[in-house]
Image (tube, rainbow, N blue to C red; front, side, top):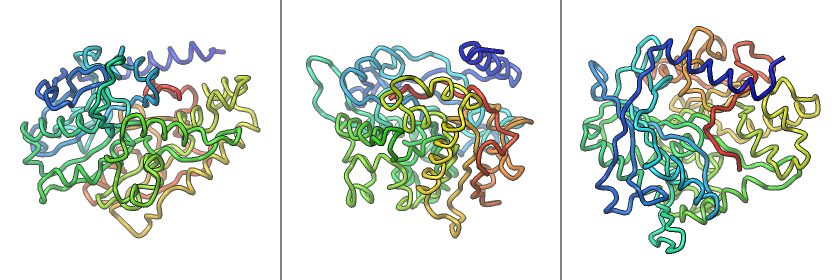
Length: 399
């Protein structure tokens, strides 16, 4: 019997060995140094950054722009903590970043996007690239400029050839998946009229629901994020004109008004949402969910019932899309969080499937208007292709 700590290490080791097996690609960092003069900076005032692996052959004028994930900061204390690591400072970012899954440059591992220009925008603002507060606190020296970072990076990519894009896909994982929804239409507006533009959100469909104790924990948390970062003016106007800005951080209130084709990829039992929206620490003071949250096979019948109820609420928030081929939907029953960036879940022989279709196949066919995909998986534990067990890969800090 392997304990949860050993299980996590084994999971990390397995991913590392898989990365080596798939001829892992490491891409150097690019700093957008001229962005500093525009105030487009990380929390600590350092320059924003991204990693670009250039396209080739038929993909030379196609662009995949991927937002990095990593949670949010909702107060001065949590933002100051991020300032000391790569989530708040480009000075702390690794100079080389591994590209796998949807970012891979190998056709056998990424059949539809392998030869595109593939960009990973580093996340160092803590607001899903929505913040813009002009004043800098003289005591903390914190900068809340996520929206400026987004525009500065796009401007830099335009100069490197994206202005000639024939195809473009804006994607992201977790907090980055939320960003790909919030910036979807603005991305479309920044590119030439003739460009085929679509958006993909991976594990970014965070829902507004109460936790185990009946408290609106995640709503309060997002309200603090939006207020601290001054995000309201950078959230979709189609939502903020109807609702309070903090509610417009939840995709369920935004996606119906998005005009650009959008694909929502998520687990109905998203492991981060189970841990932080359904059963956050405040709602579980005795840590009765600790073992369950680490490994779904450890959950009691009562806990599984709570998770089934969460799934029902999650599915209820999804927009109707049956009559629109421009919308894609892949809602599986795997206990997972982020499935496009990891090779084992994106496209391998044993990758998860819904109706015999892997995620990479569903997304590729949807982008190229070949076969629309709008499917919701059966309830846990019905899908044998899921990689159940330890699921976190460090994408999101707890809230």
